[in-house]
Image 1 (tube, rainbow, N blue to C red):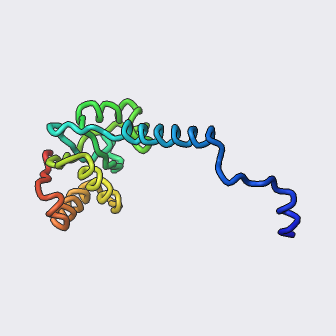
Image 2 (image 1 turned 90 degrees about the vertical axis):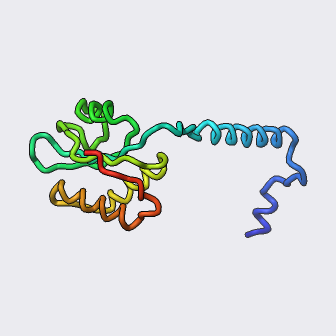
Image 3 (image 1 turned 60 degrees about the horizontal axis):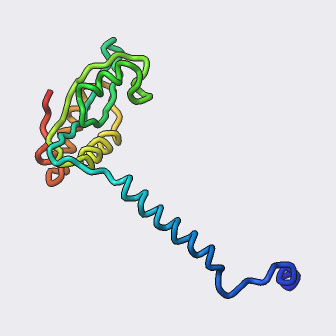
Length: 146
C-alpha cells in the first residue's frame, strides 16, 4: 500500500520554492505586528474596579464585573448593551472594589469571585473579603468603596 502511495504522490523537491519562503516570512511578520497591535498600552494612572450589581426590582439577581469606567458601565448594563447576563433588568451597584495595581490584577480578582455562587447578594462581600485575605500579597491594597 505504501509503495502505491509513493508512486502516486508527486516528487518532493529538496528546497521549497523561493516564492513560498517569502510568503511565509511575510506572514510571520504580520503575526508579529498583530501581537504588538493587540498589546494594550496601560495608563499607570488608570483606576480599575471590580463591582457587584444587584437588580433594582428586588428579585435577588446579582452580577460581578470589571471596568475602568464606573459611570458609563452601569449605564451600559441598564441600557441593555452591557453583558448578556444583565440584559432585561435594571441594576444598581451593591459594592465597588478599587485599589488594583493594574487591569490584569483586577481581572484575576473578578475571576476568583466568579468561582463562587451565592444565594443572596450580600454573600458576595464576605467572599470578597476572603479572597483579599487569602491572596493578601496580590490584593492587599484592595478596598471596598461602596
